[in-house]
Image 1 (cartoon, rainbow, N blue to C red):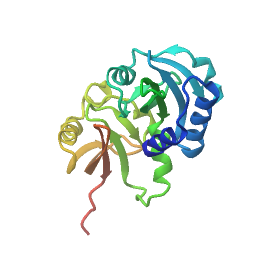
Image 2: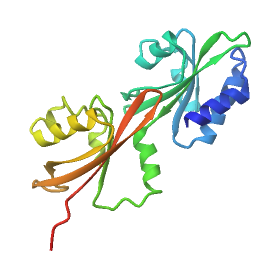
Image 3: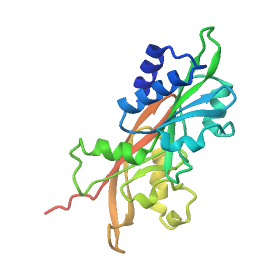
Length: 226
């Protein structure tokens, strides 16, 4: 998605003063990337001027300059991946943004793509062969769950949400996960669809984009010896 954004911006050489050109760029990005929920042009003051698809038009001209990723872009225009946040549509989202410049190489704003990690990962899982009894979850180093097969847990903060407070093993492992880009360990958690506690092993790796990392964790029950 990030490479597509960079390529489209480079090829389009869009005139930011022409709404039709910006809308064409935004729709091209949506057409090329099925996992994008929304594409927008945010001007150099942090105003979300144009949005596609059209059902989000009512959010055009909204001042989003207080959002962390927008403040970062305005302070230092460069490609970025945002931290997870709750979108106005009430789902956990992240944003990939890249700056755009006018013909005089002056920063004119950015193109931002809203991604719903839940939909992105679900679409990728269909292309994998992860066994049914394995559990995939993804979190940021700050403990925010960007993806979990239990959808009710997406967006929760692992280290501060009360629902995890009694699971010392899980919290201990999670601190190990955020402290290292790859590794393995084990924890005790509730078995699916029951109130029984179970031991799970976990292995993890990291993916990185624009100085931001996601921990991708695969958990599974230890195989019993026969």
